[in-house]
Image (tube, rainbow, N blue to C red; front, side, top):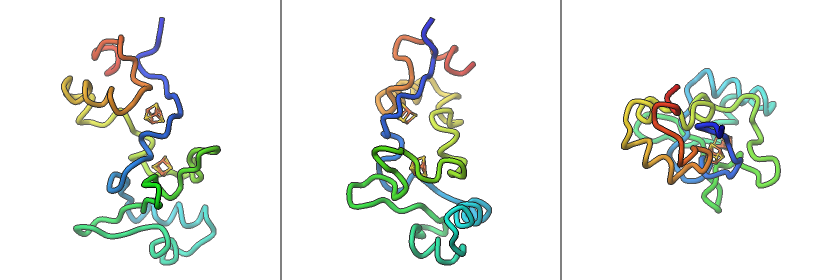
Length: 119
Ligand code: SF4
Ligand code: SF4
């Protein structure tokens, strides 16, 4: 039987600005992984919007840490929000959002049921 979710490594979820927020603990963890001070990490790879810190996108509009061949360059320490996708609270609690998420994420089995996805 096909799984309700099976990541295709397509990179769609690493595309677009504004989705990847990081808190203080994540910033410190990623900075340490990159051998940078949190301050240097912040100024090189992040921007602030409405008092929240976000990871920048590059000129191709992909996350600055997205690499076509290796996918996520900070995979072992990537932000929690990246680990969670596509199981966001708004998606597992709302069938309509799940329908929309299927368009964005080919890893969600289009023939699977919402109930199986939630499980
Ligand atoms: S941090 Fe990694 S997983 Fe998260 S959006 Fe950037 S490249 Fe994708
Ligand atoms: S959009 Fe879905 S299938 Fe594509 S890389 Fe992200 S989680 Fe995997």
